[in-house]
Each structure stands twice: as C-alpha cells, then as structure tokens.
Amino acid sequence: MQNRTDMTGVAIMDKARLLIKNNSKWVRMVISAVTGFIMANSFIFGGVAPFGVAAAAALKGWDSYCAALGALLGYVLASNMLVNMKYIAALLLVVIVKWTWTTKFGKKETTVFNVGITLGAMLIASVVVILTMNYTLYDVMLAVAELLLACGTVYFFSRTLHVIEHGITGASRADVSCAVVSAAVVLMGFSGLHVGSLSIGRVLAAILIMLCARYGGEAAGSIAGVTAGIAIGLSGRDFSYVVSAYSLGGLISGVFGGMGRLAVACSFIIVNALTALFVSETSDIFTAVFEIFAASVIFMLIPQSLAKQARLNFFDGDGTGATQFALRDKLGNISGVLKEISATTHKVSEKLGKLEGAGFTAVHNSVADKVCKRCGMRTTCWQFKYADTVAALGACTQTLRKSGGLSRDNMPGYFVKNCCKLDMFI
Image 1 (cartoon, rainbow, N blue to C red):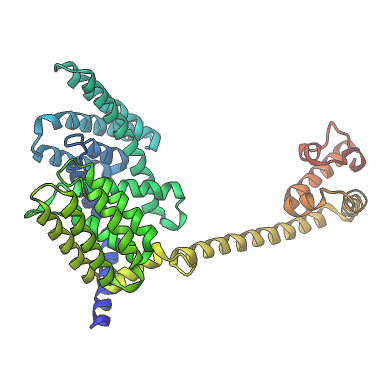
Image 2: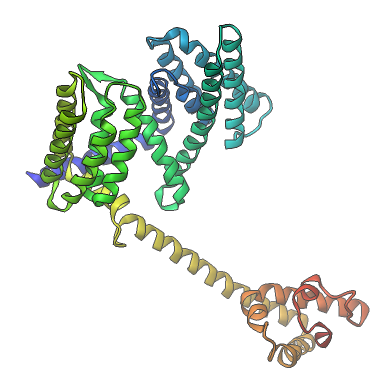
C-alpha cells in the first residue's frame, strides 16, 4: 500500500513537471494572477495590505500584469473597499510606469527600479489620501511604515524569485532568508481564506511546521513555528496565541521528529490544544483545535515520495542530500573547467612560442631560468598567472622587434606592476 502511494506521488510530480514544461508561460501567468489575489488579501494589524502592490511590482513582464490583475480583483472583492482604493491607485500607477518603461523606452526591469516605482506609487497614493481626510500624526506615521513595508516586500519577493528561478543550491543565505520572509507573507494572505470556519492559512502553516519538525528536527521546527506564528499573529485576528503555540509546537514535535510522522502529529496536536486552553480567551478555541487536527490528517496523507524529495532538497544536513550533491557537482565542474582552461592555455602558449622562433624562445627560457627561478613570486607568475605572463612576454618580443631593446618606458604594464626584479629582467 505504501509503495502504491509512493508511485502515485511520483506520477503526480511527473505530470506536474510535464504540464509546466509544455505550458510554462500560461502556467506562470495563472500562478502570478493567483499570487496577486492572495497577496491582496494579506494584511497586518487588521488593515495594512500593500502586499498585492508589492507582488505586481516584484514580478516582471506579463507575470507582473497578471499579478496586478489578480491583486486588483482581490482588492475590489475585499470587505474594506474604501480603504483599498489607495492600493488600487498605487497598483495602477505601478502598471502604467512598468509598461511605459519596458514598452515605450525598451528598458529592462531591475530590483532597484521595481522598489523605486513602488516607493513612488505608494507615496503618491498615501499623500492624496492623507490630504483628503482629517489626518493625525498617527496616520502619517502609519503611512510611512506602510511605505517602507511595501518597498521591503518588493525586495524580499525579488530575491525569492531568484531562488525559485535558479534553485536553492545556488542561493545565498540572504536569499533563503528573503524566501522565508516571503513565505510568511504568503501565509498571511492565506489566513484570510476560509473553508467553512477553518482558515486555509493556519492549516498550511501547521502542515509546514510539522514537515520541518519531521525532517529538520527541533531547530527547523522551531524556526518554522516562530515564522508561521508571527505571520499568522500579525494578520490581526483573535488567534494571537498561535505565536506561542506554533513556536512551542514546532520545538516539541521536532524533538519527536525521529520517531515518525505519527509522533510529530500527536505531539503538535497536544501542544496546540493545551496552549489554546491556557492562553486563548475566546470561543474559537475549538476552531483552532480542529484546524490543527485537519492539518495533521493532511500531513499524514502526504505521499512518502513527496516528503522524501523535500527532505533530500532541504533537510539533509549530513552531506547526502540533493542540494549537497548538486553543490559538489557544481564545484567539481568548475574545477574541471579550470583545469581544461589551464591545459589549453599552456598548449596555445607553446604553439605561439614555436611561431615566434627558436631565438626568442631561448631568450624567454633563459630569462625565466636566471631571473624567475629564485624569485618568491615565481609560483604566482608561472602558475596562477601563466597566461598573463606569456602574453606579456609576447608583447616584449614585439617591442624588441620594433625598437631593438627594452626599458621601463616600453615594458608591458603587467611586468611594471607585478615584477619585483624588473631591472634584472630587462
């Protein structure tokens, strides 16, 4: 039964890859539109929601326009339509400037450019709103904080796109950190979507924490718990206790990670149930427990092949994971290429030496033997900078042919800068 489930998971992954490969442009556009819609419903402190604008600004090309369309739909369908008019105006400004910049002027989009147009669009929209209302100092400070939040989110999203496009193997620690922040923003967006009384965002957050705890241990479980807890807590709902429940749940379930999925799920349910009993003061305690239970069921039903692939890519810290293998292969390829370049350079230099004639070759060899043999820089010049040294010798040969002699004035700049026995060499 387990093998059948694994095969089903592999088949689903293969079909998904094939679908994306054959329809990559359309799939990206649909994903961008859905992302924009979700980000428009991602907010903190009960009303600050510039993330839809940030998603449209961070993406490029048609992906950006699709994200803007999804974000526009999300802002229009939201309950606080009047407040969202500011974000809709900023969104339209971002789209207009992007289209003009890329289509009319033929320029490329960069992260700095995307952050800049977000800053300008949000600033204009915020100033208009503040000037048309009886604003207070608090409103101004909130607008400035929202402006900085929007620009920072564009930066985080842009770095995350780099991770998605090039893979986690080539990502730096800063890129991975930006991806974690972006994932937290996505969770905030999903927290506003419900199936009945259950929040999709909180269910996804619980699944993510249990996966990290199962395959990454207590460290990964704690990090995922803190990140997810803060993201859900910032959404401004009556579930502030999830910050402590998810953090402690991630830690405890990570301790039991080596005992299998059932131990992880049971420990996470128990910790969250107890935390809800002692911390929560609302009647939604049963909803919270049901969400954790639903997440645990989904966690148990995830095909082993999918979970194994995630473990190999992200959680294998013993050097046997796919990421480590890919990194080793990449370093090995680079080393091989450098060796080939070195060998080719030596062969080309030898050919050039023959073309220059036996006389000049003998001069080169004699100089190297008498001057460079006992020089402390010989390894640098004749191994690490072999090609540059040979090229400079070729330039010396041309100078000798033209002027009949060498001096400091007509020596190649390479030797003047690097040779510590230049007079003896001349």
